[in-house]
Amino acid sequence: MRIDIISVLPELMQSPFETSILKRAVDKGLAEIHFHQIRDFGKGKHRQIDDEPYGGGAGMVMMIEPLDLCISELKSQREYDEIIYLTPDGITLNQKIANTLSIQKNLIFLCGHYKGIDQRIRELHITKEISIGDYVLTGGELAACVLADSIIRLLPGVLNDEQSALTDSFQDNLLSPPIYTRPAEYKGLKVPEILLSGNSKKIEEWLHDQAVSTTQEKRPDILK
Ligand code: 6GU
Image (cartoon, rainbow, N blue to C red; front, side, top):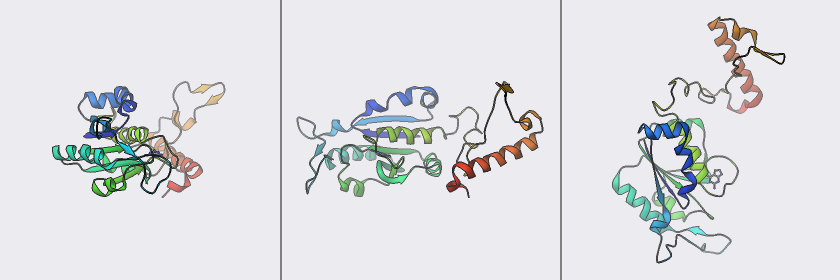
């Protein structure tokens, strides 16, 4: 998978892809991340990329031309499956969206800044608008990293144990059951007896029941 990330602050997004699992995915060639600085497409001597909103009001708007030049150049080089604008007014990211995007080949993420982007860029190029939750960030960059992480970890070969993404919380609309490791007792706190029993069928049933009751308690809204 290839992800092209367009931003005024690409340096803000370096480290997540240079560490741990995402780094390994990049090193193995499973994910290719390319950053593009919008200012490289800015207008005039000052490489202008934002201007005042028509009709007035506070804040600046990202101009149509630099964004169009950048996206059009990428589109001339390859076919993109989705061109995603990261914005608080997009649809809220969930596991299903991450699953769907993880089977695509080429994606563009556009990170918004200031008051947002000229509406016409949405009409011209954007195929999906995604938010990572009902709160406001200073820009789309951290959201782009969250979205990329949620997708890349699903690519075949990225996680060591191929099963582990399938058993994630949310994959079956259930949260994960409680988990334990050694020691079996610590400061009087015991690991549930059933997990020490060796009866794998019983354990599986117990874990499922725990997942259902945990979900009922914490997130009844996701329970089917
Ligand atoms: Cl994608 N961008 C910004 N600026 N704030 C957000 C967001 C995105 N998702 C949640 N809050």
